[in-house]
Picture (tube, one colour):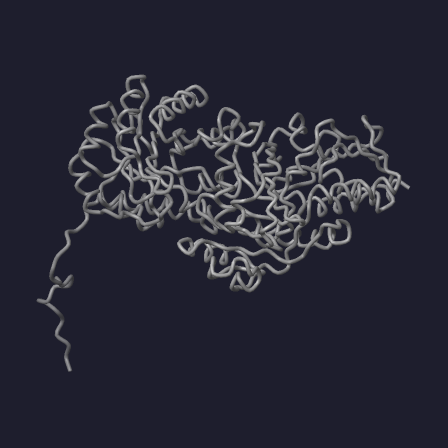
Length: 253
Length: 308
């Protein structure tokens, strides 16, 4: 449950960098995504025509504070998002460095405190740091969004062990892998590890065929989730024959 | 009489194509100057194919010949696409997504880039022009054919008003673009340079006499008003990455305008409530306006023939 909402699909799609709104619309439909993110920092109130297209997709909208570099800027953007989009959901992104696009953990916690107190349902874009995660939960966040890898890098789950620890540490908090996913196999891997959802943008938007890639990601997320629920077999160090040795037919010469 | 509304690249191309077919045409101009004057003026169908659908590539090619004989500022030296060494993957991706290019050493084409970029893509067939000169040339050509510029229409309407037509085209939206013009006499780049970058792509179009156009941002917003500081910083740092000589350039002008776009970002001729629209030029104005103008002229010539 994400702030009391059950989502039919566990894929969340970003909406930037598509060749056209038409392609974006088709990609959303092909992916089966239930949630799409939308940025407001640069577009401002005058980005209404594009947001209308997103509203028409029928998906739940998750406005974000992408492009914000301070807590204050993020809070202002969130306030505008709630007013313009009519939702209390906000993906909180406070960028610490323009080049690495790494989250600023200190400003993130500060902004999360303010927004949770103002009644927002905050989805913070964070690292896999456990203490940072705890501070965010303490601030009132009921969902955490750890990065897979730096934004737009397509590196997948670059600290798999750290992410596994985070999953184990927060068994009851929905965790969404946000950013760094480049291939459907990586999205499936995140779901197999027990994460609750995956959020991505560039891997679909900059594919040669974004609509087909969106479909592939939808299938991968579904496959990973089903596999996790079905119970994955444990890894073994040695081979174990899958066919019984005894009782084999004795062939007559 | 055919009344073309709008004197941007769409309106002027439409009127030119109609007048050249001998059809009676007039232009009804808006008070505000057209946003086409802020365009890059690139005739780059192959590069656009990176994100645009095939129709832009195949049909856009014919615009190169159209402009060659109509704009004095027309230059055909191709487009050179480069990327910083750490973004080599972007260049490979661009190469896979496009055609009509050859892998070259950028320094062989533009000696000033020698050693700065190890590898580039050359789209030899592509060209560029100076939008202000080209628009003026079309106006001159129309005037010499006796086409009048009026303030209200007297005939059948062909609506080329760009964003102003949003009163009739509900799915038309604005995509904000920002550009600047630099004077950098020390820089002698002779062809359009595109810098690929995961976040701050830019293109630099030479305009002659040391002038260069640097563009352009793409923001899903109808916000008008002057260029933002952020856009300036991004564009300038991208230009500086291509050639350090731009560090000493004079900023001659900055501009911000709203591109009219349909949901598929493909320019189109439409028939809606009793008039023909030529709109949705997006970032393909100089490339696609001549193409659609010729379609329009074909259609209206046919109509006239049937009428007689």
